[in-house]
Image 1 (spheres, rainbow, N blue to C red):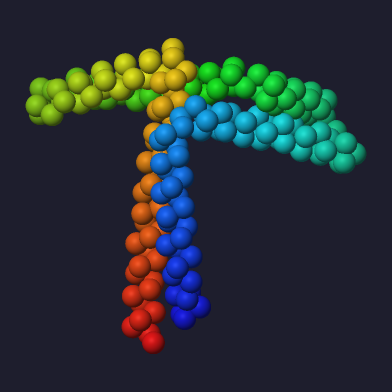
Image 2: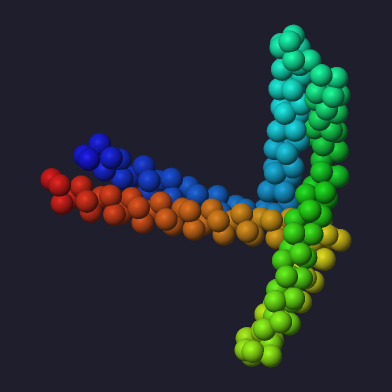
Length: 178
């Protein structure tokens, strides 16, 4: 038990760093989107290379479709890295589409509930705002970057806050044990 509680300060430090990172995300949405795009490209290249290694390594299980799929995946990953703006736009378009679908779901559910509960109208209004926000993300890369970095920043902030609270709790528990 003592070992688990001993490093409370590490959790607090990690929490502070995550909160600082959240502020960076909020203040640099285009850089965050660029970083995410680079990671998508690198992971796609890596997935293709792993497929190629598997194809050439395992001589008993060689399928042409595996080779073709791995080559195409590697090619698209390299393409994503060399055309970063296109990758950024695609990511914001998919993210925007996800938001549009969420807004549509809110509108649909609100429409069904409006006769039973007045909050259904609030759901419709929020759904329309969400739908419009998603469309803005699809058609304007800067809105997409802001949306993605805002949600990522919120998640990092809450995770950092949680780690700080966890560290404080652990410190209090150490005091009780000693």
